[in-house]
Length: 304
Image 1 (tube, one colour):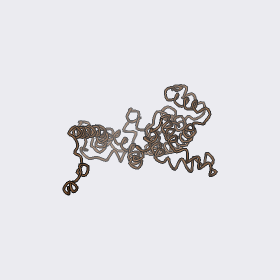
Image 2 (cartoon, helix red, strand yellow):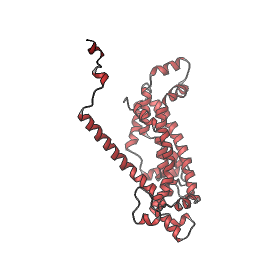
Image 3 (cartoon, helix red, strand yellow):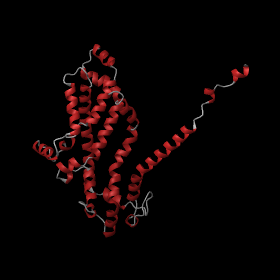
Image 4 (cartoon, one colour):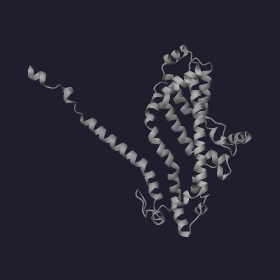
């Protein structure tokens, strides 16, 4: 009897994983590693090309490691005033557009999350309708031009101020918040706006951080609205600068400086260098907000 009492139970000894489960785990890890490798390869390759010399790039000998280490193109591009002007424009457009988008999305989502709101179904239906149908390219261009937004920041930040996907995620998140919190706030004398600012938003940091990153990445990478509504190079975002390089609208000589050998080197990897410089801020920002992704999006998707 004493031996039985002193003998550890099966739970205490630990349950061994079945063979099928171990195989599944190994296959799952292998697949995820392959997906990660396929995803990272283009970025690592672009980074390696940006630091490689022209001869190795032309010969196609650059894969994951720079060949003939060279920073001349970085020096040339970073000496271009237009690049930094466009870079500054991108920062301004992204910050302003994200701020406007968050205000509009948050207030709209909070309003339609209230089931007692009159016309709630109509508002939701209008928002969802715009996910599948829009006025078209030419009507949008005529509208922006008629409003006087052409060659202004408003042509960038206003037309896409609300993403319906982000709106629906925030709506679902607000619907999941306990109604008792807002009822208690109302008893304490808080109106709708102060309840939103003091109660709801502090509890919504995860979804707000996620939406900020979604919007910021979208506006940072956006180039077509500026390409369509702006015809002055000093107003372009850096993505249009990059697009012009890729399309061949901007030649290596327009970057300025250096002799024939320098221009040959610049022409070989200027696209890679500009891509690295363009994506760098988002790469630096992502680790600080990534932890909110799962909690923010999943909390907003728990309840339909």
